[in-house]
Amino acid sequence: MRVRFPIPRLLSIACVLILSDGSAVGQTTDKAAAIPVEASALLDAPRPVPKHLSKLFDRMESANRRSQDVFRKLSAAQMSFKPSNGTHTPRWNAEHMAGRQLMFFSQIYHALDPNIPVVNLNPRQMPKDYRPRHPDWDGKQEARFMQRVDDFCRRYAYLLEDIQLEDKLPATPWPSLKALLLQMERHYDEHTANVKKKFALPDWPQE
Figure 1 (cartoon, one colour):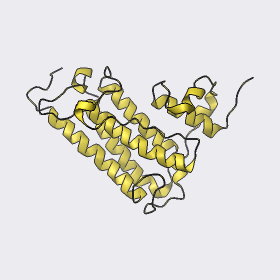
Figure 2 (cartoon, rainbow, N blue to C red):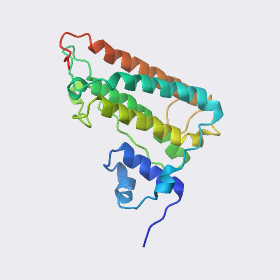
Figure 3 (tube, rainbow, N blue to C red):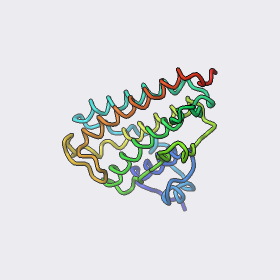
Figure 4 (tube, rainbow, N blue to C red):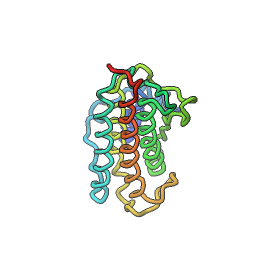
């Protein structure tokens, strides 16, 4: 017998499967992996970002794209470059930026719609503890994942319709939605600037 889910449920399953690159994230996706997903449900255009959030959402996404432009040019070896000064690899920065955005927004969306799971892919903070999720990925692949995080955030932004920019957010420590969106913009710009500084280091791999 064919199992059918309402469209929001199908979309949440599909998004999590895509974000986790086929590997299960939590119990929800273990069960979902064998469920046939109707293509028509996945092809539906997401609802637009609520108008009162659109400018700050656009700014966050623009910062993400600027970061993608930097990473997209890097080889797998450059992404995994361990600076002699003890700072993080470019790959850690990419995983950290996308992971923070994904975790915060999935926490909020889950609080508003429990069908959407919380996805925490944050890497360990200290360089000595860090283990890359995909050590063989080049910058293009990391950039594609960063874009998928943006796509996830935009797809479910309709859930924020009744949350004003100055409102306290559910399920996160952020004082307001405005504070979160502005911090995500700064976060991308700051970490991307740190990555670009590594290009001038004497041991930077020239590829």
